[in-house]
Amino acid sequence: MEQSAYLLHRGDALDAYRSWPTPTAIVSDGAYGVRGFHGDTVGTDRIAEWYQPHVEAWSRLAGPATTLWFWNTEVGWATVHPLLVRHGWEYVQAITWDKGIGHIAGNVNGKTIRRFPVVSEICVFYQRRFEVTGPGGPMPVQQWMRSEWQRSGLTLSRANEACGVANAATRKYLTRDWLWYWPPGAMIERLAAYASEHGRESGWPYYSLDGQTAVTAKEWDSLRHKWRHAHGLTNVWQLAPLHGVERVKGTMRRAAPRVYNPGSLSAAHLNQKPLEFMHRILNAVTEPGDAVWEPFGGLASASVAAVQTGRFACVAEVDHDFAEIAAQRLDDAVSGRDQEAEDTNA
Image (cartoon, rainbow, N blue to C red):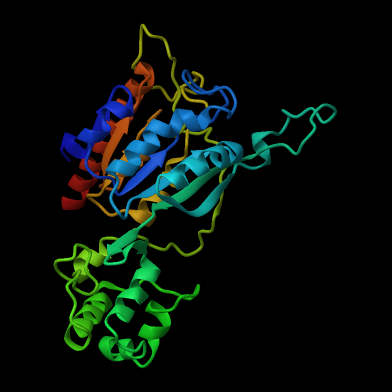
């Protein structure tokens, strides 16, 4: 495995985004508004302001099928959500990390607490909002699918003939209700070819993204975010906070920044995310070779998982000591993959 398995930027991600390849997935684990690290906000009043330049950059540089995974508290996410929506990110679902009763056992004063103890954290899944620009201007994909067919002057039922099905094309691809399905690329090609041959003459080709040629199956399929379903997984993930071998321990002394020790030292990071969770995210929406951005690296757990699974990790971390530990974890992940490849080929 070559060292090009990852890029580590020691500084603000805002200075690195333009040099990184287009991301297939962005894993954000930044400010929570709980003063959890130097530079975090105190409370959520200014948390959207903290994220704004990053969200603007993600929106400019992401591809049409990029997904975003936004880790935060419930109120932190709720505060930033309107900002994400304004910049073209479409909510898919919220995943809850249930850390279990052990997370707070023995640490709650029942006489003074005035709420249920918190053992959860959330990771919210977004995708880029995709709109298509045609002769009628930009519109959502579902609306565009129907309007393009209507523009041809053909009856809706003839879409079934175009696609070689009994009734599924009209029912799935041209409906206006919630039963709409994203059509596979092969079906888009058939609809475009049929409309071009049997529909009205048009200066703008049917089912075209640029007004010059009809979209191809490959182009169309690349516009939808990837998804690999894993049976048995729901949107509630139950796992105790890390305390075992995976928990990174170390000092944060400037005089000795590269301490990375599984021994008896205290945890290096207060809220280290399990690699298992990062594997779930990446396995669901990326493939080997895809670029994964981790703008607020910390210990770079998402990037370590990316390297372990053959993705290309792009990570930034402003804190010198965290960046040093992240670099060692990433190098270990590269070495682990090299060793695994050697064992496989032996």
